[in-house]
Image (tube, rainbow, N blue to C red; front, side, top):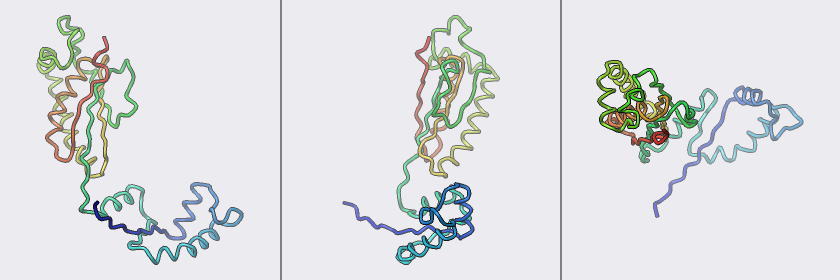
Length: 208
């Protein structure tokens, strides 16, 4: 079994910061339900001093945001292995509802629709004929170039922030043609970014 090296971390804050936090939550201090918050904080400090003295690391959170505190804990163990960011490219149709788990949503209904081409209507964005139809259009090529540039820029920030999952939803009207084609195209572009694992899911591709 791997050897464990536990670390005791004690979080504290200034008196003013603690009073402000209790004021914002509008809850009484658990040690002073019928007294002032100040008295509760004083009693709490007295009880926790023995643990504070045992701590390997004492962190003053007075001026920290929750994001800064999270980054602190993530940086405590520099040698730990970080699981890669799992990026899900999710194609969908707006007429079937927007995915509730999407972190980023891109609407591609502004692009030419293969649905109105009789020979392409029953096909999907995975078919070469649909891909060629869309790639011939200048607006589609420009849209894709800008979208790829944006995602190549922003995804490394999600990786650095330590996010485990990122769902990028691409929506067209029915979820069979445009969104499918673009999700497949983005898989290749985002696969070139280190630190992330990319998968594609087509939610509505089977809808008529």
